[in-house]
Amino acid sequence: MLDKIAGSLPIHSLAKKSEVFFWLGFWILFAKFFLQSIVIFEIPDEIFRVFLLFGITYLSIRTGLLVLEGECSWMAALGVCLGVLSYFLSGESVLLTTALVITSAYGIDYQKILRCWVLAVSSILVIMMLTYLSAFLLGDSIGLTWTNIGGMSSQRGALLFSHPNYCAVVFFAWAMSVWCLKGMSHFLKITAGFLALIIIIFITGSRTSALSLCAFFGIYFIFHFWESRRIESFERFIPKLLPFLPLILCILTFWISAVWFMSPHFNQKISDLFTGRPAL
Image 1 (cartoon, rainbow, N blue to C red):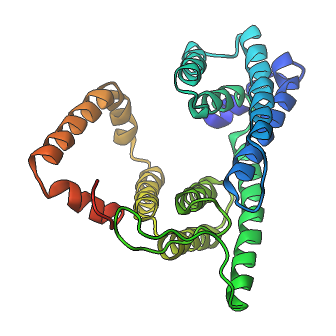
Image 2 (cartoon, rainbow, N blue to C red):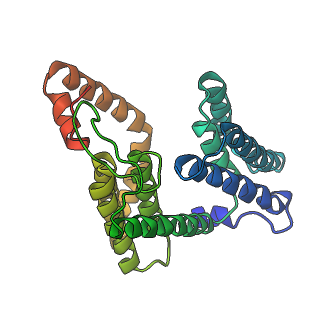
Image 3 (cartoon, helix red, strand yellow):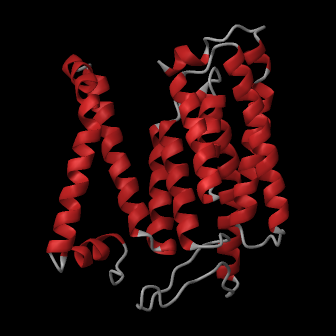
């Protein structure tokens, strides 16, 4: 389905010609994220606001042109509106930028976007790991370490990121993206996944990201098995399940909340599993 959508825009259409606005906005926001999350750069907050402004502007232009050509669905437009509302109410731009990136990416091969992102992030991570390893071999420590988190003494590395969780999330997203690339060999996928788990567990100490990545691998193998077996019942079952998904998640949320507050040790057990620190 995604392949059909990616190739659905005519070559000479206004939406097709405006792809440059997507790439400009995409890479500006990409640069903002990494410059803001890496500790070796001392950049004023005003610069990041400029990056955010230009990134949102270019993506908005692309989205507006898609709307003019009737290539933007009502659901995508609703997502952008909710992102704008969220930004003005909370000051957080994550929902707005995410909605704009997804909406303005319509008609562009998602594998191309994923491949460019993986290549750029891989280059940054390789430089970081080489720097970290060189400093370690020279007997010097580099990157931030955090102690006494949650009232418990611990030491966590962050490579060159500003926080261990930043580092864990980037490796988590990078490994998932590598596994979603088509044409990538199984050896490279396994190597990327194993490397990400090693960094997340032994350097950042983020159990949440490690468990989430393992869960992703499990889901990936399940879907890959169904696809290889061509189980048609699964394709018929999913559309029937989707309308009930919000209700299922709502019931699950209430159940977890009830168990959380009624069992005095449940929250500590969950905290032990995901973080290894005292529950707050």
